[in-house]
Image (cartoon, rainbow, N blue to C red; front, top):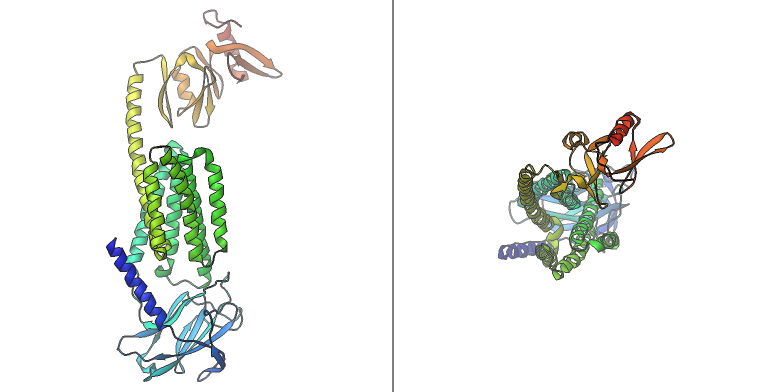
Length: 477
């Protein structure tokens, strides 16, 4: 923790120095002449640099560097740009213009190198031409910076590496939970797969800036995607925690999460929207996990501790929440849960194998494998077997129903002679049949319990023969 505090302190100090070094800008009327820009009516700039929807000319003075390190004008923001130092062109990023048709969008981050011969002793006149007609949405802070600084800027490789490693871990967790869902069809595994996938996608979206220089119109949509993914993570997190510890209140909690995430659209700045979208979900999840702890439900304490850590780090280091800590915290949630789920499934498989071994010595029982485990069902208790896609539904005495991971064809061969197939998707226990009825052109059997079952024409004769067999023990009508 002390290392994190030192790093945060250094970053805050560098940010303070950067703010102190920002030049005092003037806005002017300007045109590009053959010998450099021609400016008039210059006035001090008040507020932020905002080229959105207009042609903006800026002027300032910067001191000559006191060392031999190369310098560049770094322009970060949703704008096309062009710059001159002491009347000499430094280059262009796209093509700024007075109209959207004439403008050529530049990159969101651009560096215009300054040659050594461009500098003069003392103060130097810097002119920057900006325009932004293709941003898509209007931002309160459209420019991240227009500053002269060493070239190139320090690499963000460590932060990028950590983010991409977290993204890889999250994608692996999403795949793992997806496989578990395909095997067990549990809602929690599907939600956790979605949580991991959403966090991984957001990590990739956050990494776009250092990975490649994209055109500035993409930036607003990238920010919107990041906010949308954060809101989805919050809703999914609430769905998982509430479904586990407050199942009766799951839907109202999800509705609250959706409303809270949508409400963040009125907040200023996409970082603020994204951060509070995440925290709104964490707060609601804390409530659900807290109820689980109060009711002494298993697994509630670790989830609550993780949520408390998430909230603590978010409030202590808000600048790191969206860029780094969110991905690490998401990975620290889903990876342990994946490990626990894999261990649990392994134990269930061993228990299933043991149950199947015991079942081999009990021919009067049917071994039923389902998502919940293995159950030994007495064969006389089976009223009928009804096909349900890749599975079968066992209808049992007393109105109970049980889904079995088996094929109807296989059960038709395994069940004793007292069971007969009366339809392509129905097998009945003849001992549980009350009577055979005709309903127009169709036939059906009435069971001692439950609804009637259809009889296909091709199997009607065999069913009649079986019911008329004097050797068959049937209850009285």
